[in-house]
Image (tube, rainbow, N blue to C red):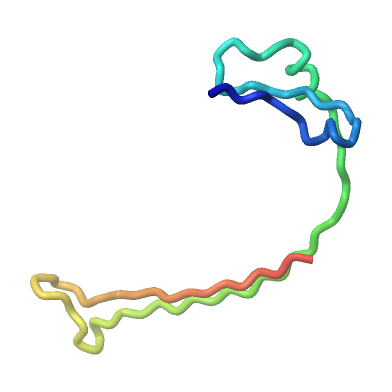
Length: 84
């Protein structure tokens, strides 16, 4: 079975150049020129982060693992992010 490269953008009648990246030596100069186009975008992003962490040594309360000289230590954390 052979797959044929198509462009979804061709339905909208805009320029599109299929790119075969799974075959060695299949990249044409036209494809390289299409991918090397310059582009600029500006904008802003606002991000809110709430983060917390609790660390404890449970060995102080007698929690140990057999054959270990130190007690069990643990860390629990959570984080919430909101992007606008």
